[in-house]
Image 1 (cartoon, rainbow, N blue to C red):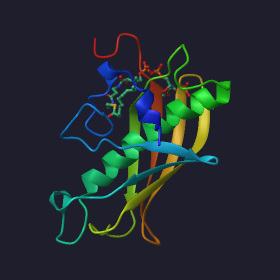
Image 2: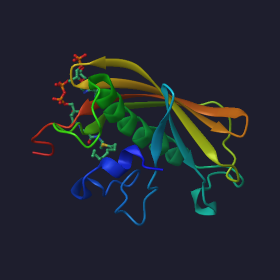
Image 3: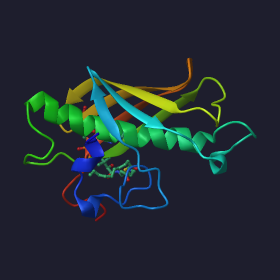
Image 4: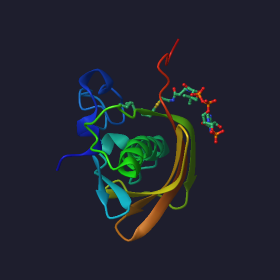
Length: 153
Ligand SMILES: CCCCCCCCCC(=O)SCCNC(=O)CCNC(=O)[C@H](O)C(C)(C)COP(=O)(O)OP(=O)(O)OC[C@H]1O[C@@H](n2cnc3c(N)ncnc32)[C@H](O)[C@@H]1OP(=O)(O)O
């Protein structure tokens, strides 16, 4: 699969959640399935919170990077452009809201499904749900904002 994150340039591929160049990170991969964006991730035993269940910070970071990638893909799709075309859309997290609905089992593949709720100016709002087998264990809303030229200054 050629994922949204595979279009990120190497110098922006060090993110803990989604950077392909970060050996300690989650290295998530996200793609379209129809009008939804989908990420699949299998937790490791070291992602434990209560034994048998996944740590909430892991869930939050999966929603976070799933959503920023989805925001970029949505912006390109709206313009009918490939994710390799210029100008590039790079998104960071403005806000991240997560509701933990049920304990998330550590021994299941997690499927994060996202929907584009709003595209306005430099901002994209993504809603996501985390599924473990047939149970929705968490849901989140991310306001993703295009990374300013002077990010960090
Ligand atoms: C290759 C791509 C990059 C790879 C890395 C992936 C990143 C993975 C996810 C992350 O972890 S990113 C790291 C955590 N996030 C940050 O460090 C961001 C720090 N904050 C900032 O840099 C700025 O505050 C931010 C870029 C988010 C917004 O500043 P701006 O000056 O660009 O926003 P502006 O005031 O122009 O607002 C633009 C729109 O965004 C909205 N907005 C801005 N900040 C918001 C916020 N915090 N909450 C909700 N909405 C927000 C704002 O209301 C407005 O919406 P409207 O057009 O509807 O009015």
